[in-house]
Each structure stands twice: as C-alpha cells, then as structure tokens.
Image (cartoon, rainbow over all chains, first blue to last red; front, side, top):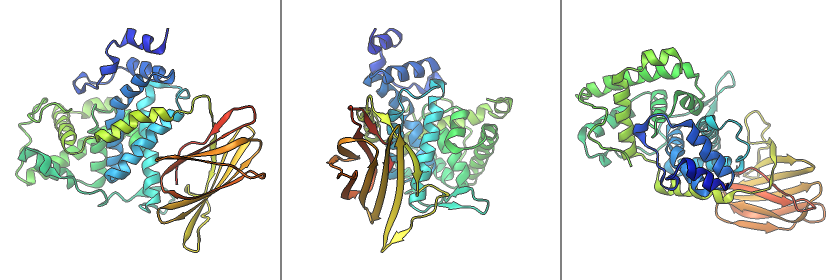
Amino acid sequence: MSPRALLATRFPAVADWRPDPERGPVQQESVTALLRAAEAGDQDAWGGIVSRFGDLLWSVARAHRLSAADAGDVVQMTWLRLVENLGRIEDPERLAGWLATTARRECLRTLRRSGREQLSADGDATIDLQDHAEPLDSRLLSEERDAQLWESFGGLQPRCQQLLRVLMADPAPSYLEAAAALDMPIGSIGPTRARCLQRLRVLASSRGLSLSGLSATGPTGASA
Amino acid sequence: MSEDDVVLDTPEDDVLLAHLRRVAGDVDPAPALVQEMGRGAFLMRALDAELAALVHDSAEPGQDLVGVRGGDRVRLMSYEVAAVGLELQVVARGERRSLTGQVVGPSAGPVLVQTGTGEHAVKPDETGVFCLEDLPAGRVRISLTRPGGVTVVTPWTVL
C-alpha cells in the first residue's frame, strides 16, 4: 500500500488537516503516522507536520527574542534539520520535543552569531534576552483589554516572558516540549508558569485591568 | 507530567493562558510565508544521500577562535562520512562569505553548493580544492558525489 493510501485509511482528510486547539493534546498516533508517511515521501503528511508544529517553532524563536526575520530563519533551519533527518527520528512520539530542542539550538546559534550570547563565570551560556526584538504592536488588538494585557506581559521579567511565550504556542505544547524548548527541568515548568501568571495578574491589576471576566472560549474568537 | 503540575495548574491559570494564546495568535502568529517555506523545505530532501557529520566547527563554543584576519572573520569546519571528508574555510566580510573547501578522499564530479537562494556547481582541482567567492550570508549545504554515484551531503549550516 502506498504511504498516501495508508495515511488515508487513518486520516481521510489528511490534506485538509489542521490543528484543532480545542482538541487538547495531539493524538500521538497521528504524529507518528504523519512522520512515517512523510518519511515515505508523502508531501501532504509533511504539510500536516508543518501545520501542527509551525506555531510551536515560531513561539520558541520569539521566546528567544529574535526579530521576525531571524525567527523565520530559525524556523526554516529547524524544518530543514527535520528533512535531513527524516528516517532517523527514532521516537516519533517525541517529535515535538525534538523540534523544540532543535529550534532552541538554532536560536542559540543565531544569538551567538549576533554576539548576544554571553558566557557566565561558570562557563554556562546565558542569553541576553532584553530589548532586541522589535516591540509587538498591541494596536493590532481590537480589544483594549487585550492590548493592555499584552503590554502587561511585556513588563514581565524576561524569563517569565520566555516561558509564557512558549506555552502560548497553538496548539498548546506539553510541559515536556516547553522544557525542551527552554532547556529547563520539566518539574520547574508548572511552578514557574504559576508564578509568572501570578506576576502578570499583579501587573495587569496595577494598570487597572481586571482579568476576572475571562472565559475559556473568550471573546477574541478562535485563532486561525 | 508530574503530580506537581496537576496541583499547580489551576483552572484560572489555564483560562488566562488560553486567553494569552489567543492574543498571541492575533498579535504574533507564525507568518503565512514562514509556514509556506516550511512546507517547501520538504523539496530539499536529499533522498539516498549520506548525511555527513559536522565533526569540527570553530564557531561552536569552547573552540579556539580562528579569529580575524585583516578585518575578515575566519571559520573552519570539518565534515566526515564514511571514507570522505570535507574541510571548509569560510571567510566572512560583512554580509558576504567566501568558501575554500577541500574534499579529502575519493570523489567524482563537481561539488554542489546550495544556499537559501540558489545553487552553484564548482569543480575541485586535482587536489580536491574548490573555491567559491561572494556568497550571501545564510544557510549553506554542500553535496558531492563519491565514485560509484553515492551522494554525500552536509547538514545545513548557517555561514
């Protein structure tokens, strides 16, 4: 059976496959099937992988405060790395973590080239996370509350912004993927997330912004 | 996920993060062009090629800097696979790159240098040395053919 036919038996609408943020964690079987089909040459399956994880890679790059141009280059390098390693991914269930790790390394290379990575006294690489990406234009947001919220987010400490920006990827990454994207212990993701969101509430509140009316579906509508 | 995650992820936090996700989707989505290029990356697959390993790169941390020569930055890289090696010297001047490479071991035919915008075929001399001047800064990969027709390709590397 051709890879395409094999895929179609499992995913009749694979060509129209789009991530569904409401569906929760992606079914691992589908990622495995997409990867195996792409390895066998199925371009639509590859497109499914790009649709599924493209926003994660973008979020990882933006979390490292790369400009839009550099972030685009990092995302593309990450896809090219996956292409050159097709057939060598031994654990398809961890593809998202592999991609997040690869994107992080490409981010670090980019930061190193631009002289923004510094070596700390103990030899660990640290990154200058401040003030390099162009500020995002919150005027794009139709709702005043969202604009204020985004500006409050911009007032968080860099480490908090970094973690939350990765967690904002759509569909939502697992903590394993977030840990891979940021080289953080997985056990610290949850506590850090809680602390950073609490700081965000404090910052928002200091601007007179109430976040109590947020609902799970929200008025901003579904993302594209 | 650990038990801590379950304890710490309050419904309020989940709602706030989901809202932030929607806001990020409005203000900073992955650009359509980036997604489109990602789909196109599949076409760069080098089927049946052996992937060489980057075994040395003077630009990686912990390596001795090759440094600066008359205002140009010099970077040395070594790739290896099976019986073939590729030594690469990259001289950076501003946003332009000059390559001098040497194929170590048996190879046949021209060396193909692919960039993000095009590709160049260069013929190594009898000692395996090839040169390519004035490439744009950015990603590059090099492929060469071993006698018998097996293609060897380097990983993409940003120069």
